[in-house]
Image (tube, rainbow, N blue to C red; front, top):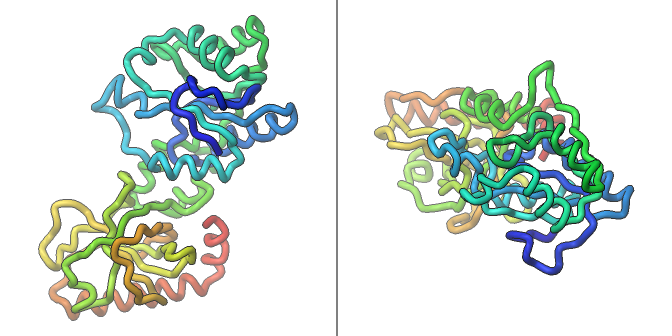
Length: 317
């Protein structure tokens, strides 16, 4: 997949079938839009293309309301590649772009730069100055400028609209199972393994302390997880929290204990998929009480992996 920052590059492939948006999280709703683009591009002999924005538009328009993102830029690009997108055009969202009228945006980017044959939007998506660009305007312009425009139906789960905002709320409530169903995969975080205080290895179980790249964490607690190490998904238990038994940290930390692995991970970047919440974080009277609880957590995680539920959930990874 090719990633272009702006439209000045000469090797952008045309004509295209495209969509545009932030696509934070690449949840099931986003996937439906992207798959429509990929399928229609294949049917029409065009290049499946996505226009996205960096930074998030609200970082420019209303910074105080800008949401923490569910994915890093690289994680999103990897997901788009897996879905079949062949090129992504990244537009710097600045004040100049924010003030561009929707009609001018369509002419400059969609028609002139990318020669779109078909354009697909998610339900309710708006673009251009004061968000006046919507599916109705796009359809009207498509008749004038010679392309086809359509809105992809909204994806719901049990009557609930799937959105990045809803997924962030679910993660903050610890409802990782429902978040997983909306994402179509377990929520993932990744980070570099750094040297911690050595408490786990000395008194409890060895853990990998992660310096995270992701900004959104599930609520503090203990989770059944999978950790990708050297290309292998390994069973693990992850604590997200402030370690109150040893004096609370100012911010939540992520520590992952790999059940079947005891190698040196320092300096490596590992991915963690959050499968199931075991319990909330709590303060224990001492190391012995904490060790006993962690042993029970580990045993529950092993039982989880041996269950039929795990077989279903692992299919998402």
